[in-house]
Length: 151
Length: 282
Image (cartoon, rainbow over all chains, first blue to last red; front, side, top):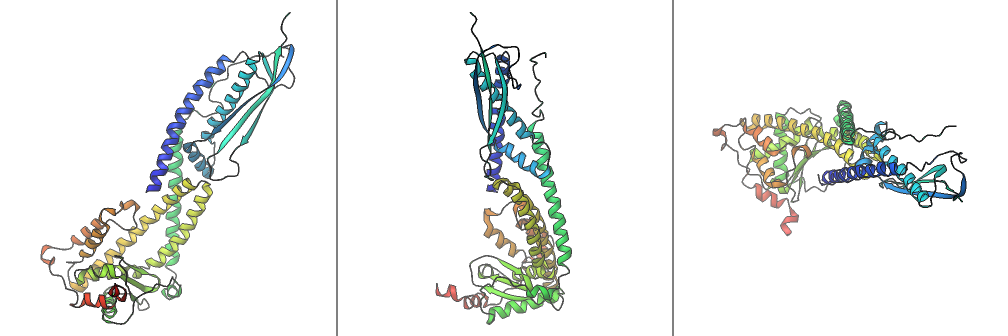
């Protein structure tokens, strides 16, 4: 019975904090994405005609997110029955968008107007450690183009 | 090539469904499947174990328990009482009941494979009359009669194996434990059913020996006092609630029978002391 109580409080804790953090994070992501819309990050390997390079620079944005207990519980049950692991989807979605935003923020600081050759890397931090709550890193990187100063 | 920068709508890469909804569906679905699985295994095991002859059960080795001497007035008295109960419960000839006495404080008694029934000093010395003792012994012998020890062993092995597979598949110690516990609670439900079946048979036996059930509930009153406030909720327990078991007996007893109890032999407490070399030296 004590086991059950610990388990339920972990779940409640995970749900409460996880849900709150997720809502807050999405709000902030959407707000910052609107602000940085003017700075496109594209996947094309070569720069488009939009921008005449003066200078190009590597920009990176990296995020590490950890899963909460509630999400983990849902994913464990999902492992038994199969199907979309929706609890992880939103987590990874947030991490990916946050990484792009950080990359864009760095590019903006440099005065860039375009990022091309945008790529993603992910790394599982707790890989192979079965009983740990997992964390994942999402890394976004690309080449920022800083236009040549006029005149 | 035209380049545009559209605003991407939300909810493509993540689900908009409320997580609690998924939680409820998944949890209830998985728990229900575990429940059905255990139920199927229990039924399966019960059918199969009923084909194991009692003679084979006697040959299954079980951990050696250091029991007291089989000679002396106490073991002889207990055995003679057991023989009366065996007769009234109509046990098949091959089901031989062997009574063992354990010199230990534990307030308990149990029946195990091969018709061996064990009584602890802790419970025997608390019994106020022979009716309670007969109720206790008839309950344990009823377990043997209904083949409960071998069924429990089979359920424990098969359901336990299934649950350990499920809980290790989960890959998380606490969640695996939770799923295992849920299955275990299902097994407990069948354990309580066994106790009720044994109680029912025991009540009939006590009634046929004494002609009434007065005093039989004293056994459960002792167990209740012993558990005190520690008695777990029925859902988490191997046994039915003691109050319910007392009420079951009391429903057959009318006021005039309450005091018609048969006393234990005069020297019963002396016999216990005699058969308990450990406590004598204390």
